[in-house]
Image 1 (cartoon, rainbow, N blue to C red):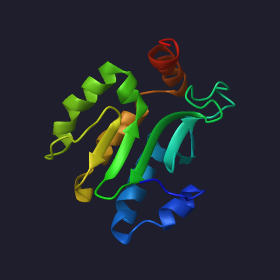
Image 2 (tube, rainbow, N blue to C red; image 1 turned 90 degrees about the horizontal axis):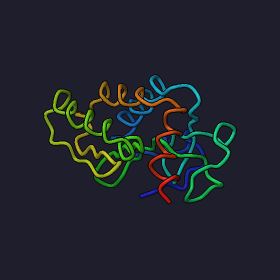
Image 3 (tube, rainbow, N blue to C red; image 1 turned 180 degrees about the vertical axis):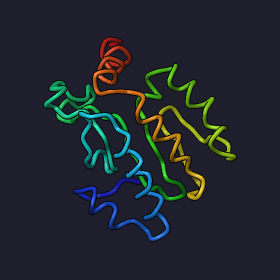
Image 4 (cartoon, one colour; image 1 turned 45 degrees about the vertical axis):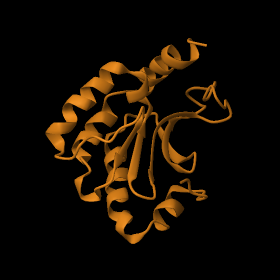
Length: 153
């Protein structure tokens, strides 16, 4: 489920009432913790944080006109989904997150390759997500991205 919203504010304003508070808390957690250099905007119909072309002119290898994506999150039909490309590309970071998750939540981790799904909105581990966001700088993300995706072609 993607949104046609053109701005983050439009996206946030059009959320169902029960999603507004957890989405606002998630957005504030990211903004408080994300390293300098990443920009916020709409990305693939979701709220996204990405490396702008001014820092990484090559853009995303799948679509170079798009900036290099890093984190997105969205209100989906049955959950709030948090996508972190660093978890997908960096096994050490993935292993750290999987080991830390039970310390922050009693819920079973519902996770795909880069997607973490939160069905219980009152049990989103904001502190853990905030810590996760701090773990990769723009420069680290570019190096990880190129090693995992660009140089493997």
